[in-house]
Length: 457
Ligand SMILES: *Cc1c(COP(=O)(O)O)cnc(C)c1O
Picture 1: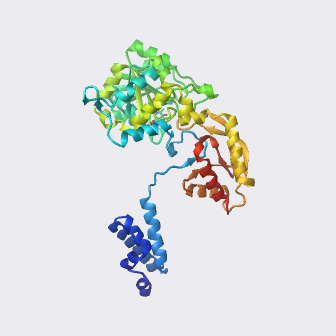
Picture 2: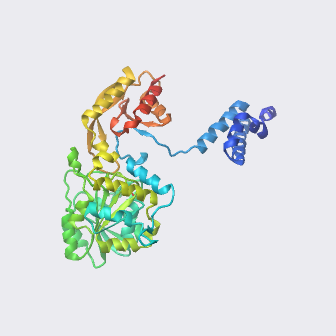
Picture 3: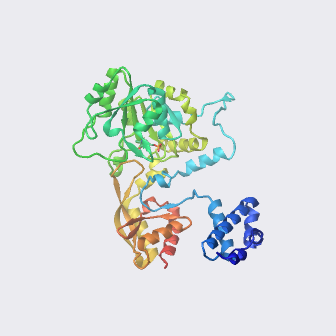
């Protein structure tokens, strides 16, 4: 340990007097900057104690600036999604339409009619802004939007099933992802899970045999993120509803994605829709707002008026209520469906319905702009986000060869993530792949600039 090493370290005041730090002091709180300087100096002393040499003033100043930038710039940032996964939960699920964004801005810049009835001048209902639209689109008698689908289900089970039994097929007592497990949510609501059938086969008779005077509901859960194939059987929703009618037990249906359009029109498997669940006679159908509905994070419960009324009255409804920004965006998104313009205006549907020719044209334009390292290949995009498991859409990809760069595709992908805005790509067999399907039209220029920079060695 050398005392001279310690003595060579600049004082806090000396670092603060550096003009590059002065720059920080004009923007940020003085005490916070001083604390940063102190902690960097403490680190430097640690190095010296370990027998290493302390940093020079320049190095210290730069490390303080880098730390300030890391701490005090937003970490929730926009990224360019070139993965081809349309509903990417880690990247924020559904991008919003222009109209939904405008709606958010217009109700949040100032005050709004969030809970105010203009006709009477009295208190109004937050639910009124979307309930009629949700009813019109799903055919339900009543509807309620809350924070997300998980909270809609928790609210539904708490309001309808607390202290009672809920019958679920063993193949549906599943984890949806991100720690959302049907058995845990049931327990949290105060209901008791009664599992019936086996993982691959469950019959109506299994549900019927499990019904007791303590049964509050039959719960059906759409297997949104996995598929059981082969020797399987599962009763249809209609069969469950028929059993429910006979035994006076409501059927609750967690459909996962709020897919209001017919996915077979784009060559994909059929994704169950809320309107089908309502038509089949489910007492309540639960779904997310930011999956195939293409709106903001929220959850929706639609169904029978007496059932939805119980949800609205439950104390948890206040705890999981939807905020005004999401409400504005949800209403604007629902209006796209009302006006029959969803496939043209809602980004996730624009991506799903992107014509093959257009994808090919875009991929070829990118490849041409990127030069010899790039070529266009066939590939697949996925819907993702717990919708249409295993379903893919044929696409055209730009494949980048990174063989001349040390670290290969992994290194180029890391460089792309460090870009501003970050670009998220896919790696497959040492190839870096870019899918035009999930890149918004106005992002092309930024994407190409980022890729060119990442490929420069
Ligand atoms: C996604 C999903 C959920 C959770 O919805 P969130 O809106 O993320 O809370 C619940 N159930 C199913 C079947 C899902 O697919």
